[in-house]
Image (cartoon, rainbow, N blue to C red):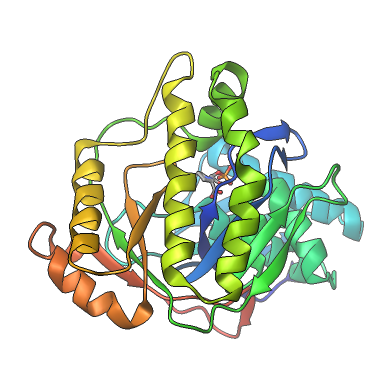
Length: 328
Ligand code: 2P0
């Protein structure tokens, strides 16, 4: 039996989005993406390789998960077993730390924590670059959660050249505020959503054509620690990504009426003189990009339209950490 330590990974939010795969099996993306790792949401995971197990098992928040949930996990475990020459099946114990029942559990923190925890349990001593590649095989966005602050996932051309690199530690006045929109609609998973968009949306090429410009502009704005520009570029980039889904066949959107209400509040805040922009991912929640020093004021303003439990403050967070004891 090989019992690893607990590993903590924080989630990240893309400011330049990953949307589409060049290689579905290896998870090589169509474009580079750039994200900010946050302190507010994280996953803690431990892996035990045990010869007595008949099959891999995943416990999430003490509840055993079905085969569908195990799929991405098994991809990572199989790579680790092959690298380490291990045959034993694994028990994976994982806890998601998400304030409120917000439905913000993320595959980014989950698969990054697993990459760290499984390689430790197997006795592998992997570099951050190798961990990023391993996390990527589980879920693309997880490649970026290996690092704290801003990270760029460089698409590369094959398994060996597609990984994230750190860009800036974000130890300056930037933060994010989540507006959690409760929505009962059944989602199109991001995996299915990006596949359908690449295949069928006539807007997809337009999306790809402007990415290099967005990426170099946001890197310059990060260098200058210009939160207004970082937010403005991220907002335009997110709106372009979401526009591609409307052109897909069949068309779909991740927006709900409450998402649009949240966007309207952001525009109100800008009229009040705040430097605030938004981004959205494969769901209806809206994430604001603003000065960390103004998070409290902005939250107070939003309380006229949203409840306390819908508003979650986040600050830049760290990369993968080994923790001596898990915190639940
Ligand atoms: C991102 N998203 O860059 C983009 C923006 C959603 C919208 O990465 O298929 O769970 O496992 O590689 O990483 C969500 O997709 O997808 C995502 P897979 P993943 O954050």
